[in-house]
Length: 91
Image (cartoon, rainbow, N blue to C red; front, side):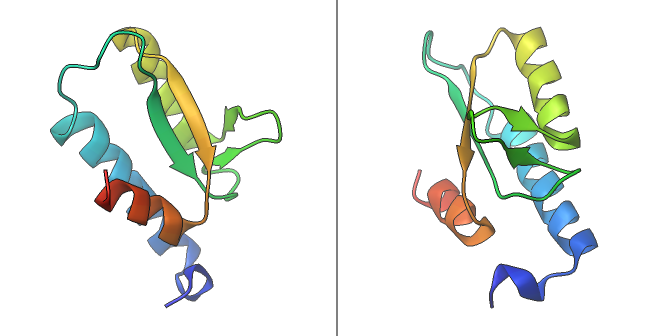
């Protein structure tokens, strides 16, 4: 199934679920100096990574807020949904 087969609301819920998992369940101690990598496909206004490698969109704003509160450094990775999910699985 390609990423175009999913409705926008389904993709939003999937991306939001991944963020919830990352920030609530998988968030253990973060190694000092190691950035938290966030992958996103181009899906504005929800989330995207611009040409300069900066996150933009609602979910990226939320991730930036959490990172600021927790003292994390973020690294944004542009990727298609299937690749993003594969990178999480192979972590």
